[in-house]
Amino acid sequence: MSRYEKLLNMLMDFDGSVEFAAISDTTGEILWNSSRSNLKLTVPLAETKKILKRESGDWVDRCKAEDRLGLGRALYHITSFQKIKQITIPVDAFHLLYIVVNNEPMTKSKTKSYGRLVEMGKIMSIVDFVNTFE
Image 1 (cartoon, rainbow, N blue to C red):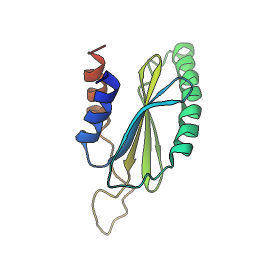
Image 2: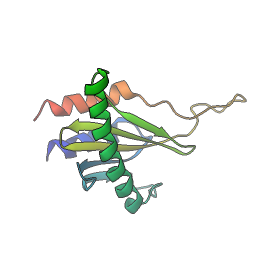
Image 3: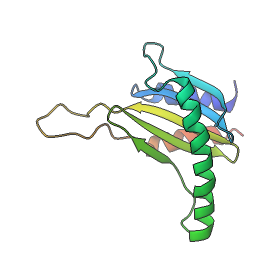
């Protein structure tokens, strides 16, 4: 099992709100993916490929901004929709991790909830842990 497959398995085991996870190369081509067997994909695979291609280009721009503006390394990017959150994380110089998390409200109360919090600290810990096996 490759370290990328291990990463996807750990993410799927980490939290039931993770619906889909994939590893793509720098062109946005999906190399590995994992999804919940009991769920229909919220974002069709063809659309996911388009998103990953676009995100790959965006990460190049983010890396240029880190150098140009001295912001430090870009860690992750989250796009939040009413039903899902899409998270992209550079795993290394050649691979991007893409995660879809359901965005169900955390509590059912009378006050408005804007969706599930993403535990990025734990997700980044999993990515860092798997990257130690390079």
